Length: 449
Image (cartoon, rainbow, N blue to C red; front, side):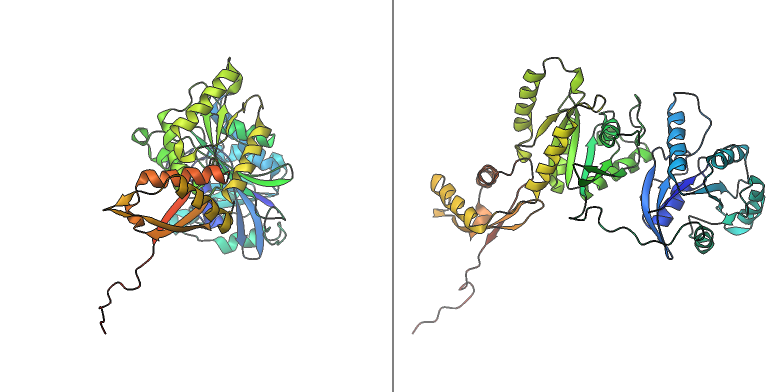
């Protein structure tokens, strides 16, 4: 599939145009310049065309080694990998010196480029669009990404350059790619880990906490299996999140958890199981996703054997709702433990999809009831008849009987823990719904002969 990169100086509307093209609000948008940092990709259908579009950070002059310089490097890499560049200017602001500087960068790349004069709605916008001739990319295409104006003219400009193509289907011929979200506290090393997994510096990294803002999806293959990785913003305690941009980033990360199948919670091995880590795991359990715990920065640990045993015991004690979740030591920076992590991820996905035959469930249920009968309510014992699995992803079981609404929580925990152990379902949420049968004679009048 052909790739189109959207570039320009900060705050000219690149992310707004990206959202308009993909038809969803995927990229974070705010009036402040410099919101976008990492490259974000999406698939587009525009008339007969189908292509991949890349949203980039604003091009800025930057000091060597700074975050801005690394952001600029990501944008220049996107230009190098693109088949076509959409160069945006702000029609209302006119052509600024920064626009001319970065137009030269695009020109030197040798890639086909189309000049878009964004925010061209109204009289003021059209005046600035005419000024864009001086940039040297030919006739500018006036558009308004916010209001959806000029999309037909954009299609006419793109069509001669890109071949019309259908959107790709599933990435894996045997099925859809496995969706894996990487989440955790800020500065846990999520982006560094993803870069190491895919073997290139796709995401911005650095010592600064909170570099990642958008959730970035990356298609990758591990041992011939299609994987879609989601790198997310760091999740801090809600009380500490005050900035509007951080709130948007957190909402984006939570959305990634909902769409994922397996979630890797990345813990800092030097300070694991902070309260926020437990909160994140609890959220994943509520969303019903498979869980893998990654102990990052393992290369900084001295007593590795002793600490690993201790942390696995802590996981069992602190996270009973996902008992048996795999705990994998790794180092994203050093590239250690990545195969172990992905093996745990694929196994967790298989467990998450597992179905258990009804006959096996009821054989187990009979022995569980024999070992520990449910309590009596008002002198009348609760009667459990049978159990079946009603769905997978995550495994959900239905228990049928009488007076089940009076079944104590401790007994349902006993059943859930027994299911987890008997049918080998470690690290995934298990749902148990209670279904009491109706008395067929309830409400009928007695009829005597």
